Image (spheres, rainbow, N blue to C red):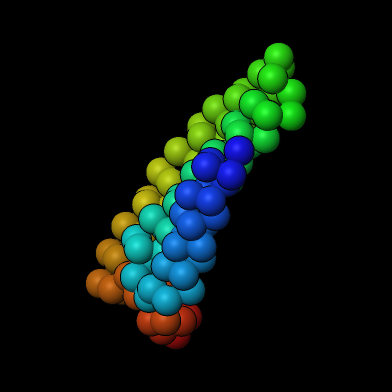
Amino acid sequence: MIWYIVPSLIMFCCGIYGFITRKNMIAMLISLELMLNAVDINFVVFNRFLFPGSMEGMMFTLFAIGIAAAETALAIAIIINIYRAATNIDAEDITQMKH
């Protein structure tokens, strides 16, 4: 089980690092997706090793992937609208749109 958990942990940590350090909204979205994929790997691994005969972890992972795809489409649409209004997608410059 450790052979699956360690890469998942590395993926999750890379996602956190990318989300915290990036200013570009697209890069932040990619980092968020990396974290969600690491969690999906954990769902499958724990389901496989704790309950080998059941499929709940796999089904929950498929549901989470579908939700992540919808969330990504919505986030990209929001980012495109922000870019049209501000011609910039840096997260720190979004506060300028309030004025």
